[in-house]
Length: 195
Image (cartoon, rainbow, N blue to C red; front, side, top):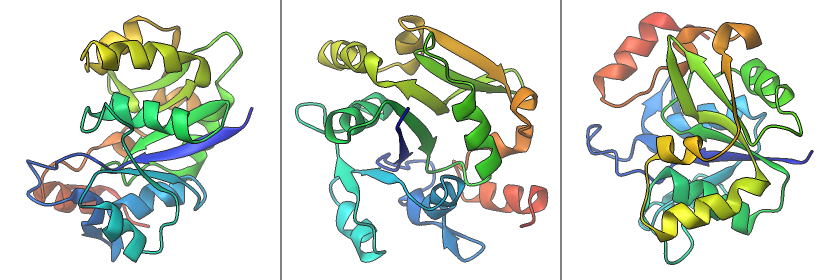
């Protein structure tokens, strides 16, 4: 199965106060930590106003949401990737999860079987739908939800066959799934992780 690696980087970062994809942690923008977990290659899902900034960092594969679903959140980003980039499975990372390790991504992909529409990690009792793998066959369901303006990812997951996998089963640590939502979270992850 051909995977497409996607870093979702088009959020408004309201709590953070500036586009968090570019926030520096250990001298590297957050989104680049996600690319590193993918082995260095990824499709960047952006939004107007940020695309040129990603390109200034040397990114060549940068997309904005397809019409008419601009600004419709993670579901629009995943759908856009499926429309614009040919693949069998789409591996998703939100740009605010810089602690995800390459081994975790590899193990997550290995969990996908022909019977699964998605594989979603569970860490500390919480599903992590933005650290997940989605099969291309869910594209029509994404389209239907976006068309109806039903943007909750939980509603989408209820409509597809999801394999929920506990983080420890794939050798992942709970701290990998910490989201950077506020600037103070950068200090929080500093105490947890040392490269």
